[in-house]
Amino acid sequence: MPILLMPLLSPDWIVTSNAQAHVLHTEAQYERAEMQYRAILPWAGRRQRAVVLNNLAMLLKDQGRASEGFALVEESLGIRRIEYGPRHHETWISLSNLGSLYGATGDWKTAGKLFRQVLSERLAAGECQADAYVNVALVEKLEGRFADSLRHLSQALEIQKQMEKPNWRSVVALRNNLGTSLMAIGKMKQARGHFLAALEAVPHQHPVRAQVLLSLANLEIAEHHWQQARVSIEEALGLGGKNQSAAEKMLAWVEYYEGKWEAAELRIQRLMHPGKMDTMGQADAAYLMAHIEIKRKREQAAIAALEKSIEMTRQSIGVSASSLRGTYLLYAKLMREQQRFAEAAKAEQQVITLETRIALAH
Image (cartoon, rainbow, N blue to C red; front, side, top):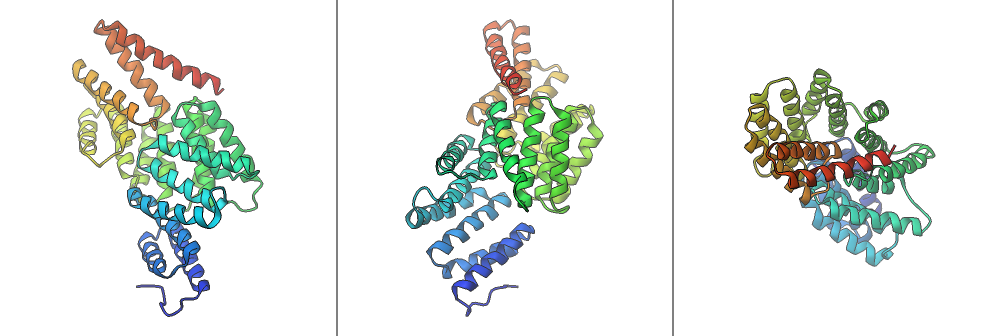
């Protein structure tokens, strides 16, 4: 049932209605929030319209519909550049949200450019928020620049600690990113602490919880705790939302490690249809298929799967460093067995580069 009363068209009504929609969004009542945001838009003035457009775009991203949000954020950004100028906190919000959309659709290179622009301009203006550091740190982690990522995350944590009551979603994003960055350099105990802190901050039934559960499951897999990983993955699947394909892919990894290769292969084959996973997910799925092919003693098929995974990593920086390192190690091993020494040497050089970055982060 619509919440809005159309005759009440005062500016205060617009602000109140937007705030109500934002609460619904935060509570993951996505359909009701979208209805309310869209009902406000025709009546909002220019500045308030920019706010609502941003909020609606982020709602669509949270629903896994990020591509629908680009036009909304670009309109918001255009309004704010005119109303406030290019270097204003409202304009930076729209730029950051645009970066988030690019990241959600797999274009982390463009996302990184926007996030770095926002952080640079905020620092030059003598102000910064924890979220600006977190956004840049996320890209740095995906690039394998772990020392830089952890430095920016530590700066964000210090800012957040000084806040009287930080937004719970910001707490979750920061703690989850700290956990994944620490995990990438092998600091599992510290990573687990941040994942647990993130789970404590997020409402129990909120879809955002699924993202943290999958991060924790990834740690459990790395530590060979298959049953614990399965528990976290199944809870994430039960929460629904946009993380379903990622959860299914991780469940395939658990099945593989449990020796259930056929089940893992069938699950991955279902996921590798167009539109099911982004480039990052496809690259990791191809890496898993290579492992399955090796178990079946089909080395040429394994090489083809690894080459597919490597090619996908060239299309996106958003592949975890541990998976990327593993891909190159396995590829180098197979190349040496095939006496293709030049290809093996190139892959081994990539491993050395990643290991150097990990060592520098300690």
